[in-house]
Length: 101
Image 1 (tube, helix red, strand yellow):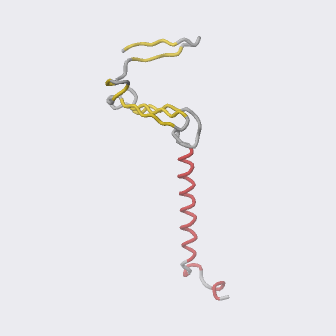
Image 2 (cartoon, one colour):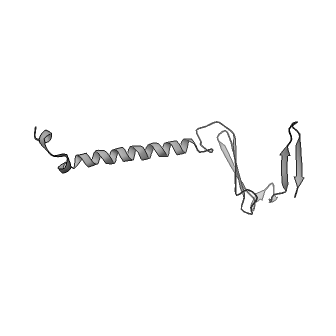
Image 3 (cartoon, one colour):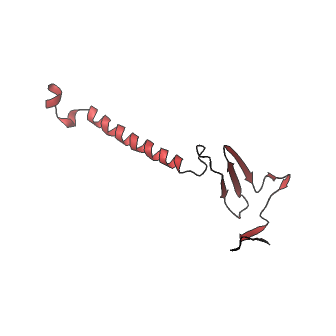
């Protein structure tokens, strides 16, 4: 009965409950951000991510199923140095047009 009549401001356990709530919200936010990441390892989708497009340090990350491949524009790609060669456009009728730079 002593705990029922005790003032809440003096009870140290009440502040611990607030900390637990804050950590639960933080954990939920982190889980949501992991689930929305395009390279999420738990999805079976095929994804291609291009970082720094058109720049010298461009990276291409390809995820097919559970395998992830990473290509860098300054690293080895197909046995040689890689760089941007041009732009490809898909037309309304489905044909592809390549424009070299």
